[in-house]
Image (cartoon, rainbow, N blue to C red; front, side, top):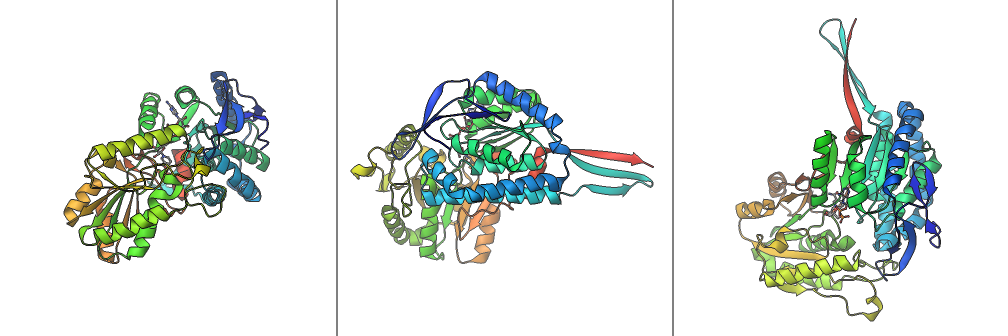
Length: 482
Ligand code: NAD
């Protein structure tokens, strides 16, 4: 991508300047402009959806043999890999994540396309001989135009998780990336077209969610919305979807508990808890942001944890050794600072962090130090609300019943972590904790083959997994009398 020019956006395969206001995307590490683009206008949204519908009906993509669609998706995976370093560097500028994390996300996007290419080829239709001479068949068909609405925290990976299964299923896709991180979605669309996705089938519409997102969601030609973002936005979209009787999937917020038992491998658990909350600067839906430690080991564990947090290398995302980069925007840092202040007002005490780094070289970026707050109670706002930053609240627990009650006392139920050497206890807690994903003696590890999603306010439906492709298809039962 030539960052010196104003970026075109993708409207049903046509690359041109958006019809909305011009704006700059900013590098979170310096606050400087990365590039400029025009947001999509409402007319662009209309054109993109109508064009996608036309391409869906006329390109024959949905009718192609699965292995033919799969060949295109395999090519997308290959092209992502061919351009991996450029894409990772672009993501660093777009989002400010450390370059090592950007490389992992780009690799995961390629793996996602490869996986759904295979899922597309191996999807079986079922035929059941039933009731004497009658034959019944269950067939799956593409839906038409589906929308993918994505947040700013994992560009390219979030878009790939929606675009790959939607395309594999034979649909057209209208992507609405976060206004502040649109660049990787645009690159992914370019790559998809280069790999052979038919003209018009993909659009990427950067701009304000409250304007464009609503216009996309209410549009009668949009047959499904796959949304990743905040719970408030998700519920708003779900209300619109209810009126249209439109299926949606929702990957929403979290406040995930991490539990360390007294028989855990302490050093292993310290490293895992630090990674769980402070990787991606805590800007992660699955961040392990509520820590419960057995009282018997609490002091010793927290000593090591606080030392580990203070030793994390916070700094330039381009530096290979950096472990935590800046936050996405200055405004988001303000929100995190006000949460920390609230936590202290509520009676919490600061164990480490709670401030911006003092290094003058980092003064222009949206940096904030890894922060741990103790002496909190699970009912406090700081323990209940998603902060979406590098802030961990830590509590001691005495007995298992009370622990599980507290761990589950949250509107969110996205993920949980358990650290113990006792396999029976691990299994007991894995079953008792309410969460879409449970990690035992590890955290934030993913397989594209494993379904992902949340309970309660953390979401609706599942992404990933071989059957993730079925979310983007309509099922039809056919009874055939002989
Ligand atoms: P957000 O809800 O503000 O925005 C997400 C997307 O929705 C953006 O593209 C935005 O422009 C769009 N949007 C905003 N208003 C809309 C509307 N009225 N209609 C349609 N679209 C609209 O969330 P964010 O701040 O970008 O992302 C952070 C949130 O995302 C956090 O809560 C985080 O936990 C969540 N998240 C969840 C997962 C998951 O898989 N569960 C993954 C990543 C992030």
